[in-house]
Image (cartoon, rainbow, N blue to C red; front, side, top):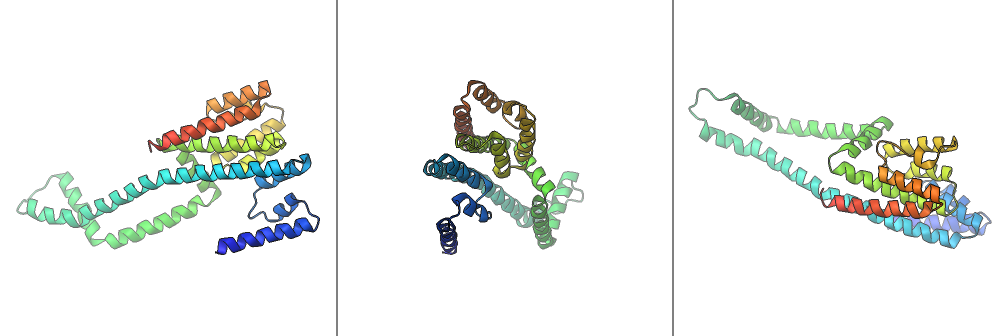
Length: 275
């Protein structure tokens, strides 16, 4: 209900501003906490070209597909996280409660135990006697990790880690590449200049490693370097670069970007099945 009420207030504010003579894009820009630069620039392009209804339809389609893709990624991650949590709890229960009882039966009367067995029993004793302290320390560690990830350096390193994880990293790379290509295609085909489109994509690509690469690409394009060359980086797939290069040379950039988005969306979904 609160979300619906807030949305009504935003719509009423936009209506009031537009009725008062403001451009829709200007009214949206005033609501920057809700409308990112992507939406503002898209609407500006529609207003300038007289194609605002078509642009709004493109925004709707892009947003729907983007939300669907994000939901799929979250769903793909939910099961492995659940399994990991269940295994951790089961492992702790075995070490803290089952192993001590087994040890009394199996090792009673033995004067000397092998080193691996002594280590295992030591871990079991620690888990039994200091279990509460262990979980408190773990909770503090998780809180500190969340704080670190919230910092610029921590966020960048966390995004870098996600890109380098086995299996999961390839899925994230495909997901971010597909999102970037969709966004760039929608922006450039709506009349937004490539440099502005790269800047907007960098702000909203949702991965700080890609964000840094896109900001560098923007500077290179401003310096006269072709976009396909400027986008070359360790984490941008070579296939995406190749298709963008073909699009630049043939004048079919929009078609190539759409192809990149479709291919890497399919690739992401295929990789989800293996996570």
